Length: 229
Image 1 (cartoon, one colour):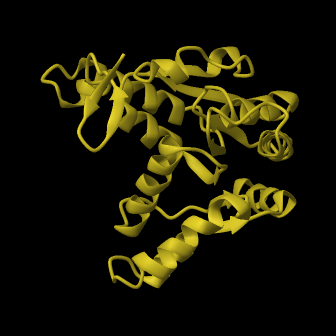
Image 2 (cartoon, one colour):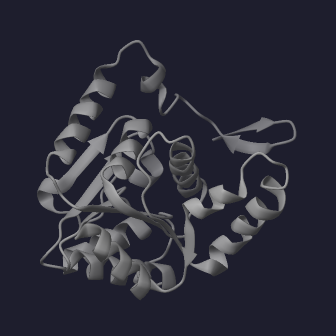
Image 3 (spheres, helix red, strand yellow):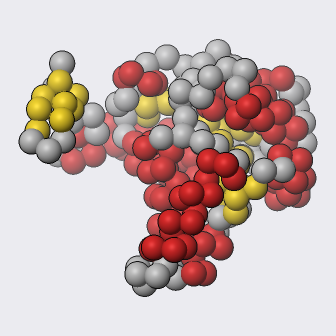
Protein backbone atom coordinates (compact mmCIF):
# COMPACT_ATOMS: atom_id res chain seq x y z
CA UNK A 1 0.00 0.00 0.00
CA UNK A 2 1.36 3.44 -0.93
CA UNK A 3 0.22 7.01 -0.43
CA UNK A 4 0.70 9.93 -2.81
CA UNK A 5 2.24 13.17 -1.58
CA UNK A 6 2.46 15.99 -4.15
CA UNK A 7 6.00 16.26 -5.43
CA UNK A 8 7.15 13.02 -3.81
CA UNK A 9 5.30 10.32 -5.74
CA UNK A 10 4.20 7.11 -4.06
CA UNK A 11 5.48 6.55 -0.53
CA UNK A 12 4.86 3.55 1.74
CA UNK A 13 1.75 3.76 3.87
CA UNK A 14 2.78 3.85 7.53
CA UNK A 15 0.30 2.27 9.92
CA UNK A 16 2.29 3.22 13.02
CA UNK A 17 5.43 5.06 13.97
CA UNK A 18 8.10 2.29 14.00
CA UNK A 19 10.15 4.03 16.64
CA UNK A 20 7.28 5.67 18.46
CA UNK A 21 8.17 3.99 21.75
CA UNK A 22 11.08 6.43 22.08
CA UNK A 23 8.63 9.34 22.11
CA UNK A 24 5.92 7.71 24.20
CA UNK A 25 5.16 8.15 27.86
CA UNK A 26 5.59 4.40 28.40
CA UNK A 27 9.35 3.97 28.67
CA UNK A 28 9.40 0.30 29.69
CA UNK A 29 10.79 -0.85 26.34
CA UNK A 30 13.40 1.91 26.38
CA UNK A 31 14.56 0.97 29.87
CA UNK A 32 14.64 -2.71 28.92
CA UNK A 33 16.86 -1.85 25.96
CA UNK A 34 19.23 0.08 28.20
CA UNK A 35 19.46 -2.93 30.51
CA UNK A 36 20.15 -5.23 27.56
CA UNK A 37 22.85 -2.84 26.33
CA UNK A 38 24.45 -2.89 29.77
CA UNK A 39 24.48 -6.70 29.76
CA UNK A 40 26.24 -6.74 26.38
CA UNK A 41 28.87 -4.34 27.72
CA UNK A 42 29.40 -6.62 30.71
CA UNK A 43 30.54 -9.44 28.43
CA UNK A 44 33.80 -7.47 28.37
CA UNK A 45 34.57 -8.35 24.76
CA UNK A 46 36.89 -6.47 22.42
CA UNK A 47 34.13 -5.51 20.00
CA UNK A 48 34.37 -4.45 16.36
CA UNK A 49 31.18 -3.37 14.59
CA UNK A 50 30.32 -3.91 10.92
CA UNK A 51 27.71 -1.75 9.19
CA UNK A 52 26.35 -2.09 5.66
CA UNK A 53 23.38 -2.79 3.48
CA UNK A 54 21.01 -5.69 4.05
CA UNK A 55 20.62 -5.95 0.28
CA UNK A 56 24.26 -6.76 -0.47
CA UNK A 57 24.06 -10.15 -2.14
CA UNK A 58 25.82 -13.25 -0.91
CA UNK A 59 28.83 -13.94 -3.11
CA UNK A 60 29.24 -10.31 -4.18
CA UNK A 61 32.57 -8.51 -3.82
CA UNK A 62 31.58 -6.54 -0.71
CA UNK A 63 29.91 -9.53 0.94
CA UNK A 64 32.98 -11.72 0.48
CA UNK A 65 35.33 -8.97 1.67
CA UNK A 66 33.22 -8.55 4.81
CA UNK A 67 33.41 -12.31 5.46
CA UNK A 68 37.17 -12.28 4.93
CA UNK A 69 37.78 -9.25 7.14
CA UNK A 70 35.50 -10.51 9.92
CA UNK A 71 37.19 -13.90 9.96
CA UNK A 72 40.67 -12.38 10.10
CA UNK A 73 39.99 -10.04 12.98
CA UNK A 74 37.95 -12.69 14.84
CA UNK A 75 40.92 -15.03 14.73
CA UNK A 76 42.74 -12.45 16.86
CA UNK A 77 40.03 -12.69 19.52
CA UNK A 78 37.95 -9.67 18.53
CA UNK A 79 34.17 -10.04 18.84
CA UNK A 80 31.98 -9.05 15.89
CA UNK A 81 28.93 -6.86 16.42
CA UNK A 82 26.40 -6.44 13.60
CA UNK A 83 22.76 -5.52 13.22
CA UNK A 84 22.01 -9.22 12.90
CA UNK A 85 20.20 -9.11 9.55
CA UNK A 86 21.12 -10.08 6.00
CA UNK A 87 23.68 -8.69 3.55
CA UNK A 88 26.78 -7.18 5.14
CA UNK A 89 25.48 -8.02 8.60
CA UNK A 90 25.23 -11.67 7.66
CA UNK A 91 28.68 -11.55 6.06
CA UNK A 92 30.22 -10.15 9.24
CA UNK A 93 28.58 -12.76 11.43
CA UNK A 94 29.49 -15.49 8.95
CA UNK A 95 33.17 -14.50 9.03
CA UNK A 96 33.20 -14.43 12.82
CA UNK A 97 31.42 -17.77 12.91
CA UNK A 98 34.16 -19.30 10.75
CA UNK A 99 36.65 -18.41 13.47
CA UNK A 100 36.99 -20.43 16.64
CA UNK A 101 38.53 -17.47 18.46
CA UNK A 102 35.94 -14.68 18.31
CA UNK A 103 32.28 -14.24 19.22
CA UNK A 104 29.53 -13.39 16.74
CA UNK A 105 26.90 -10.95 18.07
CA UNK A 106 23.69 -9.85 16.38
CA UNK A 107 21.81 -6.82 17.66
CA UNK A 108 18.47 -6.74 15.91
CA UNK A 109 15.51 -4.41 16.12
CA UNK A 110 11.83 -5.27 15.93
CA UNK A 111 11.00 -1.85 14.47
CA UNK A 112 12.09 -2.53 10.86
CA UNK A 113 10.15 -5.64 10.05
CA UNK A 114 10.96 -5.93 6.35
CA UNK A 115 14.71 -6.03 7.01
CA UNK A 116 15.17 -7.44 10.48
CA UNK A 117 12.25 -9.77 11.09
CA UNK A 118 14.63 -12.74 11.21
CA UNK A 119 18.23 -13.02 12.33
CA UNK A 120 20.90 -14.44 10.09
CA UNK A 121 22.01 -17.97 11.07
CA UNK A 122 25.62 -17.06 11.90
CA UNK A 123 25.04 -15.37 15.25
CA UNK A 124 26.18 -17.27 18.34
CA UNK A 125 23.17 -18.77 20.11
CA UNK A 126 23.66 -16.77 23.29
CA UNK A 127 24.73 -13.57 21.50
CA UNK A 128 21.47 -12.61 19.77
CA UNK A 129 19.56 -9.61 21.13
CA UNK A 130 16.46 -7.80 19.88
CA UNK A 131 16.00 -4.13 20.71
CA UNK A 132 12.81 -2.05 20.64
CA UNK A 133 14.50 1.32 20.08
CA UNK A 134 16.80 2.24 17.24
CA UNK A 135 18.67 4.83 19.29
CA UNK A 136 19.76 2.43 22.06
CA UNK A 137 20.58 -0.22 19.47
CA UNK A 138 22.89 2.14 17.59
CA UNK A 139 24.45 3.37 20.81
CA UNK A 140 25.17 -0.25 21.77
CA UNK A 141 26.79 -0.95 18.41
CA UNK A 142 29.14 2.03 18.54
CA UNK A 143 29.84 2.67 22.22
CA UNK A 144 31.24 -0.79 22.86
CA UNK A 145 33.48 -0.93 19.79
CA UNK A 146 37.23 -0.58 19.41
CA UNK A 147 36.72 0.18 15.69
CA UNK A 148 33.89 0.25 13.14
CA UNK A 149 33.82 -0.66 9.46
CA UNK A 150 31.20 0.69 7.07
CA UNK A 151 30.57 -1.25 3.89
CA UNK A 152 28.25 0.01 1.14
CA UNK A 153 24.64 0.43 2.17
CA UNK A 154 21.58 2.62 1.87
CA UNK A 155 19.79 5.18 4.01
CA UNK A 156 20.13 3.10 7.18
CA UNK A 157 23.89 2.77 6.75
CA UNK A 158 24.22 6.50 6.04
CA UNK A 159 22.14 7.34 9.11
CA UNK A 160 24.35 5.16 11.28
CA UNK A 161 27.52 6.68 9.81
CA UNK A 162 26.44 10.28 10.26
CA UNK A 163 25.04 9.62 13.73
CA UNK A 164 28.45 8.31 14.72
CA UNK A 165 30.25 11.23 13.09
CA UNK A 166 28.00 13.73 14.90
CA UNK A 167 28.82 12.14 18.24
CA UNK A 168 32.54 12.31 17.52
CA UNK A 169 32.35 15.86 16.14
CA UNK A 170 30.67 17.23 19.27
CA UNK A 171 32.84 15.03 21.53
CA UNK A 172 29.95 13.02 22.94
CA UNK A 173 32.07 9.90 22.82
CA UNK A 174 35.65 8.79 22.71
CA UNK A 175 36.98 8.84 19.12
CA UNK A 176 37.36 5.46 17.48
CA UNK A 177 38.70 4.37 14.08
CA UNK A 178 36.03 4.58 11.36
CA UNK A 179 36.75 2.80 8.09
CA UNK A 180 34.67 3.23 4.94
CA UNK A 181 35.48 0.19 2.85
CA UNK A 182 35.36 0.58 -0.93
CA UNK A 183 36.51 3.81 -2.55
CA UNK A 184 34.36 3.17 -5.64
CA UNK A 185 31.29 3.46 -3.40
CA UNK A 186 32.35 6.13 -0.90
CA UNK A 187 34.50 8.57 -2.92
CA UNK A 188 31.51 10.38 -4.40
CA UNK A 189 30.12 11.12 -0.95
CA UNK A 190 33.51 12.25 0.33
CA UNK A 191 33.99 14.52 -2.70
CA UNK A 192 30.59 16.14 -2.05
CA UNK A 193 31.43 16.68 1.61
CA UNK A 194 34.75 18.27 0.65
CA UNK A 195 33.63 20.34 -2.34
CA UNK A 196 30.22 21.46 -1.10
CA UNK A 197 29.70 20.95 2.62
CA UNK A 198 33.14 22.11 3.77
CA UNK A 199 33.07 25.06 1.33
CA UNK A 200 29.73 26.17 2.77
CA UNK A 201 31.43 26.27 6.15
CA UNK A 202 28.97 23.98 7.92
CA UNK A 203 31.70 21.47 8.75
CA UNK A 204 35.45 21.93 8.90
CA UNK A 205 38.00 20.21 6.71
CA UNK A 206 39.33 18.55 9.86
CA UNK A 207 36.03 16.70 10.26
CA UNK A 208 36.83 14.69 7.13
CA UNK A 209 39.66 13.19 9.15
CA UNK A 210 37.18 11.47 11.47
CA UNK A 211 36.99 8.60 8.99
CA UNK A 212 39.12 6.98 6.30
CA UNK A 213 38.21 5.44 2.97
CA UNK A 214 40.15 2.22 2.49
CA UNK A 215 40.30 -0.54 -0.15
CA UNK A 216 42.97 -2.69 1.49
CA UNK A 217 41.17 -5.12 3.80
CA UNK A 218 44.49 -6.54 5.00
CA UNK A 219 45.56 -3.10 6.19
CA UNK A 220 42.25 -2.61 7.98
CA UNK A 221 42.57 -6.02 9.63
CA UNK A 222 46.12 -5.37 10.82
CA UNK A 223 45.16 -2.01 12.31
CA UNK A 224 42.01 -3.30 14.00
CA UNK A 225 43.87 -6.24 15.51
CA UNK A 226 46.24 -3.67 17.00
CA UNK A 227 43.31 -1.76 18.51
CA UNK A 228 41.96 -4.98 20.02
CA UNK A 229 45.24 -6.08 21.57
